[in-house]
Amino acid sequence: MRSPAFAALLATLALLAGCASPRYQTVLLLEPPSDPAAGPCLERCAAAREDCQSRCQAARQACLKALDAEVEDAYAVALRHYAAALDMYRAELEHYRMNLWLGWGHGYGHHYLWYDPWPTYYMPMATPAPPRREAIRERLAKERCDDDCGCQARHEACFIGCGGRKVEETRCIANCPPQ
Image 1 (cartoon, rainbow, N blue to C red):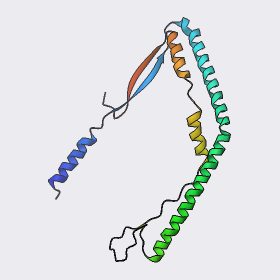
Image 2 (image 1 turned 45 degrees about the vertical axis):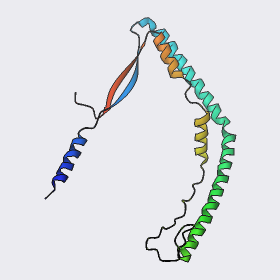
Image 3 (image 1 turned 120 degrees about the horizontal axis):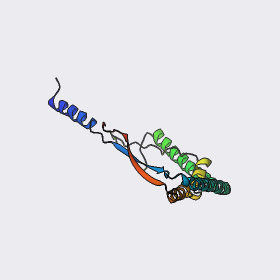
Image 4 (image 1 turned 60 degrees about the horizontal axis):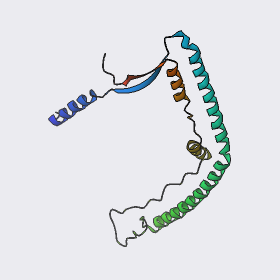
């Protein structure tokens, strides 16, 4: 037989499962002007956006190419740090093995001369991870090479200048209430 507390817990969980709040997302829509004479203006806006995006991509590629020497320097420094961490790991591992061999099983400063039924065992540090050149390149690219040149904001301003409208629409994307 189940206890009343268990039944109350099940009822509470069932109630909470049914109370998931809906999640919404705001979407920006560009509505074109109703006047057909605005067509050439909209075409100029689209051409300006394409030109802006191509110049932005060219600048980003040039920036990424310029990072090559700096990536190699940073990778060499990371390799030196890795070698030092690996040396420290080897020394600590040797100390750990010595503790196990002597039967102490404790970390630094915990060498008990009496029997301890609940010893605090010492475990060596985790093996250091080697550096990755790709990770260094990604970090430097994120710091130095901008991939957003403001082309979308300029396009929206041009679009609105041609008579279009920018409309924000909020849509339910999860746990939506019935309609």
